[in-house]
Structure formats: structure tokens, C-alpha cells
Length: 304
Ligand code: C5P
Image 1 (spheres, rainbow, N blue to C red):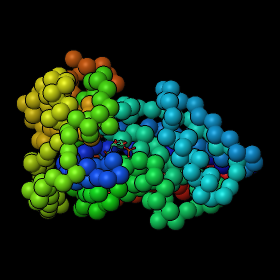
Image 2 (image 1 turned 90 degrees about the vertical axis):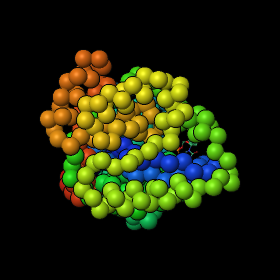
Image 3 (image 1 turned 135 degrees about the vertical axis):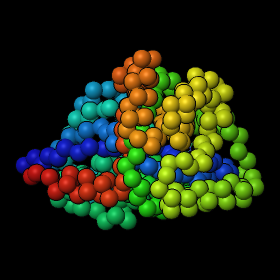
Image 4 (image 1 turned 120 degrees about the horizontal axis):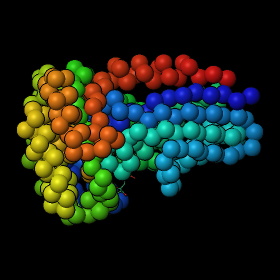
């Protein structure tokens, strides 16, 4: 008997991102504020008990799709065998700092064990998520959250209103490992000031319901140097009323958060004259309470 479920897998932006020191394991310690947004992929999952096989169909061909690796790790953790089928409709641009692959992986971690009739404890899901990628554990939580360590140590922040936002993803690919290397962080950097600034910002975000936060993304310095077009998109977002306007992750998406839908829609119309339809996305911030409700509904709809 085949069980089926359709889920939406949301994107994230980094409202703030500070890279501290290089660690002995090759990763970097960082401080970030993750935020889910309403742009989403759709994943249809099917599970049929029997011989193990993983099939994937997608509107985009993605080499080494993280979804397949995730399904493998769920089969191993549940000690089950069977055919797992995916139909993936990608809308979140790939390799653009929006965490699309990581979100898909977390979606499979949450949905597949339920489809198999073998739910895994949250502790186990968190452990598997961290082995799949630094951004994957955040998508088990959603909303606004501070990420510490390599990004997998998470502290939920209070929900703020669903501010309107605009995502601009020009067709520029930035390699994440290359962006980290270009920062040339040492292993013994003095990071006290960076941590203090981050803590002040996190406090303000948690306690003041505005968007005029003093946000920073350390990758902007190196990535804007290589792609000046990105800096001018940021400038334009600020001029059109976005506060803040920032790059997400290691790029190349720029986002702007707007105090009103009118200002956001006006900015969207202006950017659409210059960019293709799939490079400009009007979204809103998705709070943890909405993210949790979405996942509750999605998992309740599992059909056997
Ligand atoms: O964990 P994830 O697979 O997303 O990381 C991709 C690459 O980004 C890593 O191989 C590493 O080069 C870099 N990275 C890092 N420090 C982090 C997260 C990622 O150096 N905290």
C-alpha cells in the first residue's frame, strides 16, 4: 500500500550574519538571525514498503540532490525498506542564499518518517539535520531564530509581524565555500565586539516591533567586491524604502523588508522592469506560529 503527502517547503533569509573564527573542523563559528519567508517549493512524497529505491522527478535537474541523501538517512534511521518517490517543484532559486535545498531536506525529515508510520523523536531529527547541512536544523523550527556555532545551535526569538519583503535573485552564482575562504578568517580572531553587537541587535529585534534594525552580513564585503551589481541592487532597495536591505547568506539574493505593502509593491513593479519574473519575488516574513501550524496541517494530511 502506497502512502502519499504533499508539503510546502519554505525559504529563509538571514536578517543578520556575522562570521567569527575558523574552527578546527573546517567550518566557521557564526552568529546569525534566520527568518522563514513565504516563498516555497512543493514536494510530493510517496512511500511503498518493499525493496528500497529512491526516485526523484523535478522541474529542475539538481546534481546530488540533498533530498535523496535525506531519504537515505531516514531509511537507515527507521530501519525500514521501501520505495520512496519524490516529485519536486522548485520555485526557490538554487544556490542563492535562500536555503532551498536545506528546507527540502528538513521537509523530508519531518514528513517521510510519518509516511512510513515510524515517527522519529525530535532529538533524532535534529541530529540527522545537522549531518545534512548547517542550515537544515533551522527548518525544523522556522520563524525567527538566532543561530550560533556553525549555525546548528538555535535559539527561538519572539515572532514579529509578517512584514512584506522583496527578494531579488539576479542570475549570479556564488559558491558558499569560496565565499567563506575569501573572508580569510583566522582561528584565533578576537570576536568580542562582533558578539556584543550581535547580542544588542538580537535584543532589539526581540523587543522592538520595527524593521529599522542595524543588520549586517559579513559576506557582502567580499561578494559585492566580485559582483558590484549586487551592491547597486541593495542601494536601490534602500532608496525605495526597504529597512533593512541586505544580502541573504552567501548570496546572491538581496532582500528588502518594507514597512508597508504599498511600498513593497511599488518596489516590485520597478525591479520587474529590469529583472525576469522568476528573479523578483514578493513575499512576507513567516512567523514560527504560522510555520508550526503549516507543518501540523501538512503532517495531518498524510494518507495511507
Ligand atoms: O553545512 P553546509 O554543507 O551547508 O556547508 C557548506 C560549506 O560552507 C562548508 O563545506 C564550509 O565550507 C562552509 N561553511 C563554513 N562554516 C559554517 C557553515 C558552512 O565554513 N558555519
